[in-house]
Length: 463
Image (cartoon, rainbow, N blue to C red; front, side, top):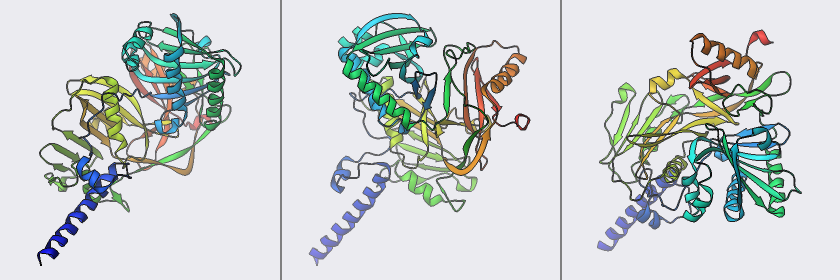
């Protein structure tokens, strides 16, 4: 009798382990691990330690230049594909064999005249921190040339050229540090891979360089959408609630989702009042809140990890956390980094087909957020995670953009000047405008002296 009791107990434990593993795999893509391994070394959201050797510098966008004043802009890391490896290998090549040439005022016409690949970062990166990952000796060779930068441009004159040029540009100071790698074979390889990437993204929105095109209105150089003739057709987006079934909210889906924040066997408690549309789940270390507005908040009050935190190690931790959120089906990109009392805060916005998805100011104010996704990292641990829980799906329905960038810029400048404010245009771009409605259309956005203006992308008067 005792033998059967032990056997039944073993079956119960094994079944619990299987349930636990299923929950873990929902957030963890390492599906080849065994049950026993997961029981012993389970990694859940908010609890994994960062390896101090791991570092990450995530660009805001990757821009492909073709040497003919035409560009393509890709924002989501998922869309970078193999070309991001080409960029990483290029920097490795620079560190191993490159030489410094000069620091000068950034001459964008010269920098962009050849086929090039460009990393644009959302904020200035300290050169010392960027090159430190290659060792102190390397950092001393490269980092003392320019204090910080927000662009890395890598270019090759042609497949038969003898060298590859590297530019680290600080758009705030207009300074550029130039380095060169002398290697015919490498330059030809880089040139060919750039050409392959051009073919991969040929059907995306075309861009121009403001300086190359003679528009010196912007601070530094800006990449602006412009297409030839007529209107530009695009797919309308539809927002999807990941906790809805047949258009109705499912508390079961929410409960399943939040379980991954607590581990398989944690005593998660529901303490909020679902009647108000607010759900609060908690245990001794973690609190997860979900609001009827669609905002989800995660707070981790557990023990901090050891090790020194830097921007790249913290960003690595934030990205690792996001990669395990399998309910996140829409592409996203890094838009800002801020130092706050609670830690380093990384801001991400959604994107679709290379276009940002802008949440309306009313939505941001209602949810008290600055971006669709906010990740706060302190001591190399994610302490806070806030996300607008919607995915955006492209449809087979189309709409049209029939206003160009001059129309949008004039509109924004006139509104800005009417307030008597100083004029310093920074950005102009197209984005999907999410305002909580069932269909999401595109608009122009202009950023002037830190103020963002929304302008119509479709005007009946322009038809």
